[in-house]
Image 1 (cartoon, helix red, strand yellow):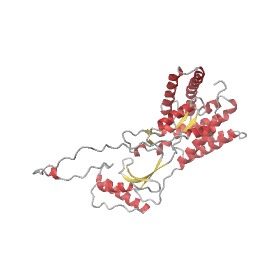
Image 2 (cartoon, helix red, strand yellow):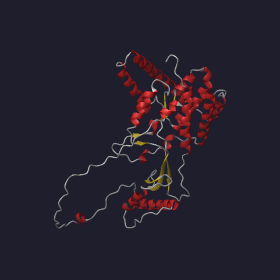
Image 3 (tube, one colour):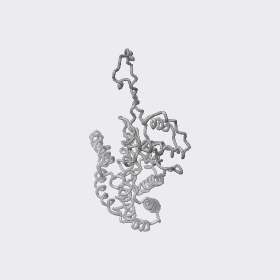
Image 4 (spheres, rainbow, N blue to C red):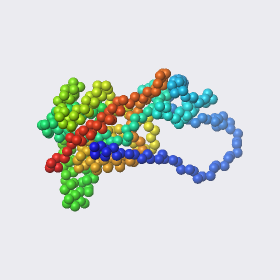
Length: 368
């Protein structure tokens, strides 16, 4: 599918970390020791290490208990930190852990919902830096085609599930794509006067597309917000004709999404997004999940090439992408390493499949 290959063209270049300049100043001359009457001035202090503990005594105990459980599972030899005081003893362990991976996961010290900080492993789901943009224009065209009403009803239910339960944002509500379309429209308006007559005709088509996109999106949003239920979803599947390839493909992906909805009835994509685990630097710009997962207008219209170019260029400047993570806690003994991505694997695959099916329904209007 041509549009899918375009959508998958997103790659990032990780920006190098900012480094401090090496000082060129000469070392200070040593001063002659004097008589210090205050013992505070002669005491050697340990460097302060910020760790997420409220009561360090209990927190230290909880950490080393979780470390024991961790070592039992991975047969890992923890460093001897008996000669260090808190919190340097914990920092020494974490420093050694940070250089290794365990079942493809990183070991981290994490605090959850007011509980003492504990050792956990964090594994990231690889989204392959793809754009998971679901086109809405096919739904609009189905709505206005009497022969496609069964497809419209089923697709509306799919969109309702993705919007209401999964939490995928809609391009006509405030958000990343809403802002992107506004920026694109303003940019096209600025260059319109510089074009020749042929180019101006194309710009007029683009502005007509903007107008249709806004009115159609605002009309469809209440439909997508309308209640839905799994029984109706099941009945709608049976109404789709299987005599043509479009109907069969739509029915197949809708059936798999229904299975996902039954297996994970309340699961949202944001549930496994943990941006707070990322240690950001001052100049670190991030791709949030709402930036690359969204409803958008169309992958076959006069705007899509410029939109994807704009998004790609912006994402190339980002240093971090928010992706789903699975966390395994070690506050209790663990029998095996377990980082479950069944939901994410199925969801992202089906979003890609649904986009391909909808692109086959999407076509330019005769008078566009």
